[in-house]
Image (cartoon, rainbow, N blue to C red):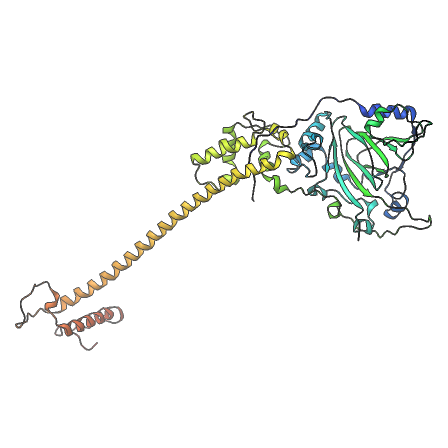
Length: 498
């Protein structure tokens, strides 16, 4: 797979683990002392989709629905420990967050560990649920109307958010848009929430202005005469429907939740008129089109996730010095099967350069503490810096294999050359053997008409015509030895009948 990493020195934004002021409790007490608390409708069993569409989604009435049986799988798999086991989970940072706003630039791993230790943080983790998680979340039966799931025009589902609140971390009071409702589902823990009806406010003799309810207005106002509010908590598997124009705030109490934002459905003009609902089959929310989707891609942070595995998640009980990191990297089967020779340059690349890239907090150790330093704002730079190191590693490995290929090519050529020389030697031996046979069978007769020549010169025996005949006969004799039985004739020096 292709990977990325370019290291920059960056400042880290640390999480605040100190206890914060209990704004939620103060606001809740003020509402209880002067507001009007109303009861909330609850369904012990989920209603049919058609009934829910016509009698609940079109009404301006909050209610709770027990959906435990449908999301049991989610409840089991979305515990902090099991989420930490997911290699993509600790490094998820939504692209939709703003790194300039500290509360929107958080490390999910920090929140998961804070839940296990029941520590309160200043802000909850709220981010678009990544596509890689959505295949574990079933489409709730109350939404299984075909035109809601597969719309021909505007989508009914706007977005779905992951909300994690360690300890008594608070969900800030915010007003829902007039065009959207919300379904808040607890998967882990027991969050406590307060709902306030923004549309119903008392009018005093001194003012006729309408107050927009939020944390600041709730804390600045002492009395809430005539304000309708609901206070309730959610068991795991229970969902709370928040109509448009209602304000919601809460104390999350070590919880993990999903929050669906839904398009407002207008009520038919006539009470006798109903909205049609063709029921669909079971599916998961990864098959639903949301208006807002996160473009998170695991390949963007694959390298960070890969080296995170060295730390033994979810215990995170391992740490490495530079030398220990190199030894672990060297013994990594994915690496050891590729590297042919650990040269000084290669050792320095891993032992120093790569280690320094991953040692984000500069304590000369690679540990889980370095991952607490990762934010969305620096994640891409980190990934690119590691890719740069591994690209250099790839080049070195390729060069080693090229050198090996060149050595193999030279050796192969030497073998081919040796075989050619051996074959040529065999051919020369055959020619010499033929000539020797001819020399043995031919009697030397010096010519009286020619000058004397050296006795070892074969040309003395033959003129040009005889020379050609003897060579021809020599070849025939050689062929005879291979293809026919020899003929004994002591009186015949040269055979001419072959």
